Image (cartoon, rainbow, N blue to C red):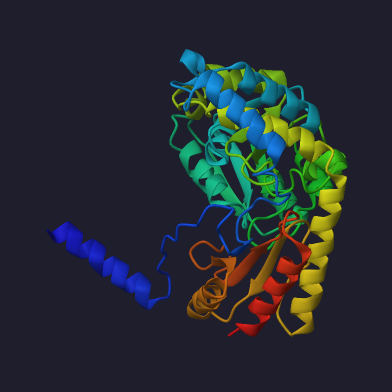
Length: 385
């Protein structure tokens, strides 16, 4: 089996380079002793009684799965209520829910990248955006090209657009970046895009529920909610504690996605129970200023403590706290030691990191007990390389 031998050889090379990845099942919430600073449940809503009650009621009404795509039998009142709520919070005329944020990004870029479109993508964009840009070139739309712009650099984006005058263009960025948790200069990027006649797409996954009025996200915080030539994607698996993704924007984009979007048309819909639970979480998120205050306070305290011990920690815009590690082996050993002591942290290594640096990523959860959070920071510092 030559192909299996080649896979084994590649796996051995990854292990030698410190890039092995393993699956670790977690226990049920009531019996899991691990302090979770690795998941993305920023506001602690995944197990809120109102969320669970809404999901359970929908589960009894509609069953376990959606049973088909949204255009066949997969649409329920739960889906439409969730979309109405998301459109209202994000400040756009319409919203369309997907079964994952990954598929939402694939669908959004494909819909916005027309013939001959120049896509300008931030160097630190999430893998789903990278894949979306690659796929946009292979969808029969001639001339689509992607240029990777230096991270969070509006002047570089302006220079790229100026070098292609008159060409349709799409600027793509995250709002809060998933690796280091820093905030994109959204107002400046939008001004650059509009001055060159370009569209702009913002992935608000790590800002929804964390930034902006009522937790409406980074776009709303920048005063750009509903702005012309702008669309937003987000995941429902972070601050909402659910699963799925969303594209919000003008109604013609919604029509285009429903009529032609392959990642919408041919994908089984989000389970109705998840949609109902996410809708209940959306209500809690909108009223959760106290939870957001707790999250930002904890992120600030984590940075102060870690920097105070000499660690390299960028200033976070939301709940992502990135901690530099000397290398992939050290990052993996650090994360493993923390897990062995009951603290789950993210471990980011190449090729998952856009700059080739390894780091721990801590995601702050406002639902954790205060003492547990502080003790988790003690463990992280004690186990540092």
